[in-house]
Image (tube, rainbow, N blue to C red; front, top):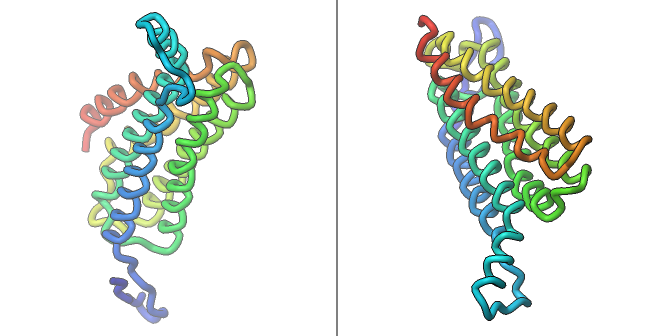
Length: 215
């Protein structure tokens, strides 16, 4: 339920209930993660009569498996990061709602981009599409972080410096990885997706920075 508030001498402004968006966000991420794994399937028209045939078909799935693993962990990383950020949020304003909706737009596009890059890993457009969706997720996360920093009244208390620093490192790390992936794709698209495996290092590194940053 929305609760109106008023600034001194100003008009009433609605406070948008956070739990409504939390439910929507969890649902979108759950569906996106489920859709990712549905792309891991063998050709329905083929029948395998020997172990070698089956192993060969499974080996052909490796590009899809790599795209699934990267996409799964990036979605998990962003869901966890959003969960951490939302823990400080008391209520939403209209702009923050739309920032978060933009974030969900890119999260919901990731299964499609993952399926394309898994099907056509050796083509530059597929890698650029995948990198573009990743960049969109990173930029909307940066937008969200900047909005919360600019409007501390939306939070229960000011976001600690360590949380802000760790979030910025994850976002900038993903943007740097996007640039690296595109550069690799221009040389050999087949290896571009592997650049996103750097997030497996950037995530724990940012968590360590958060723990070591004074409150």
